[in-house]
Image (cartoon, rainbow, N blue to C red; front, side):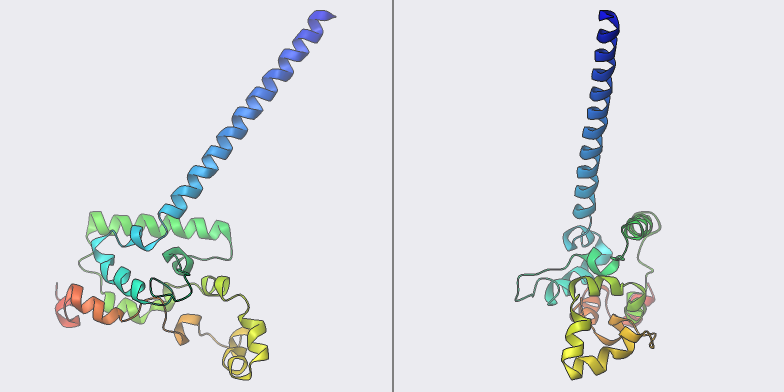
Amino acid sequence: MIQRKSRIKKGLLTVILIGSALGLFSVISWIGTDYALHATSDQAFCGSCHSMKPMQASFLDDVHGGASTKGIQALCSDCHLPQDNYISYLYVKAKSGAWDVWKEFVLGADDVDWYTKRNRANEYVYDSGCLKCHNNLKNGSERMNKQFVAHKPYFLGTTEKSCIDCHSVGHKNLEHKLKAHFGPYEAAIKK
């Protein structure tokens, strides 16, 4: 009987120790993952690639970046990754991050036509990012007639336009920064 109680205690202690170790491992893994996600989401990280220097500079000149008078600065991932679903966020971050690294360091980014990509910004910006910060837009629009009229088709789902189609934000004077970095459009696309 005493041996049985001793085995039960040892078994319980083993289960508790294994459970604690797994729990600690999970917490450490989560902290590490969260750290890595944040460390790879801001303009300092994204701008560390040569081809992204003009985007970094124009972002820092924009109200959503370094020129905010309210002390709020968006992360690159706030706009360029979906914010409505964590699984989608992780998937798009992994997929686009892997492609960006591959393109920058293996294939070379010299042939990227940034001028044309700028005209397709709605393919690289997620409305869920805009609405994450501007989460009171729908209710605020209903109180202000001018905003309401402008955003009504969007909130009713009767337009194909995205936020970035109407609002040129995020990268102030991007064309100027592209020209300063890559040269005029014609010269840049002949590289």
